[in-house]
Length: 52
Picture 1 (cartoon, helix red, strand yellow):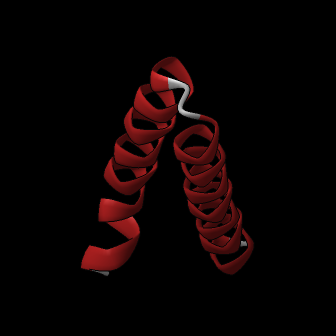
Picture 2 (tube, rainbow, N blue to C red):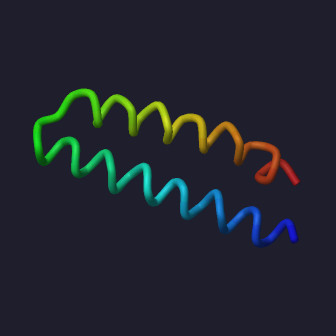
């Protein structure tokens, strides 16, 4: 079960990176900042998985 949880968070990281790339491409500051905040939040949720 933990393996699926980890893969889910990795996919969230990929989504955050893709949204950030789209925001940069379109020059949309709000989308870019929002995706960076989402990326940081995903990394923080991954910290307990990486410490194991």
